[in-house]
Length: 53
Length: 221
Length: 246
Image 1: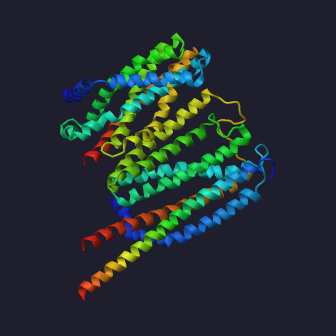
Image 2: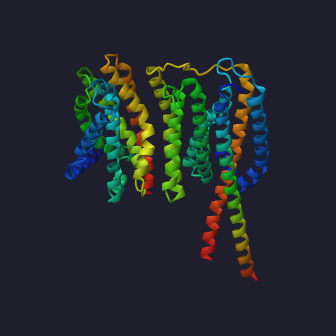
């Protein structure tokens, strides 16, 4: 690339930083929330089973 | 209609009893403007160049500083609940309170603006336009500010949020106010920025009372 | 009434979670494919521009980012209006989670715009460029919206306050844009830049188009992830309350 290659690469590096970081943070948040929800629901089911038994 | 003026009179009475609101705003306005010669240098030509912008930014900050008085005290002592229960629609109450706020804070700023103009070497020929632009523009500052004040009424540490909410919305008023003042200083036509400033104020007059009333209902509910 | 019931069919959180779980693999795949194709077209397959040279390649990021920044704010305000009128938590959650993504797009538009302008203008920030200035103000609007959500403890109140702010902001965006444009004609800077922006050559259209699709697919994917996460978090909070009571 020509004289301004550094500017072009910097722009793509910025996009390569901002977009994946945002996506990864959202995905990790989702996985954490789903795991907590599943654990709590299992707990409550167990409690309910105890109550019935 | 008498209920409307009743709210205005009540707020003006409170402001007079507490005292100092106007003086505080004007004092802040003049002191901030007086900082600029120290910051940009004493050269008269430089000062003349930045004068319109400095006057407007200082007036805008002085208005911002006074916004927490708009609803917060009434919210805390419960009189806002009483006002909301009165037959006057809440957006009219908001409008009355904004009018009182403008009379207490905005109008003194307009009157003090020529003084700051003298300090900053603004040409005398620009003074009538400066006054006219300030009269047209400061109501918009009070109206738009009311939205920010209403959104943060009843929220702890809400006050620090107001500048972030309100300042971006102030930018069009700032642009046209400065443009009218600067055009007058340069002897250029001023009709267009003044008319745009007036239309901004009209728009704020329509949007701000309704939006603020909606926000206040949250704080009360 | 039919609009209402149609909306509520999607708005049921459980149904939403099931539906979004089915859609998400496809939007994720589409995002990856479109970004791969878009990057290839933007960096390899397209020629440098006659006047802008290689820096034209920055436009393939800047234009979609700027477009999405505005689009997401409009969408946020629409969700806010729906949440405000129908008091539906899912619309509130959607509006809330639009904001960080939109702010990210705005930031990217600002950074790429500055990098595009640096070799052209000789400065990193050119106030004379009306669009860049407008996007800076849009970024402030996003920050204010996000901050307003933070200060309320009750999510329902936060949603309604933020919705009012979003709708006021939506009315203000054209006003701000017009005033900044008007201000720009007053302070015409000595630059190679015209008010209408650079002209678009047909060789630019394809990479631009594909990149815009990639940004859209990315937005849908990340937004759905975030909404699902927030729905699950609220469910967790409700379950914890139940457990504490039991």
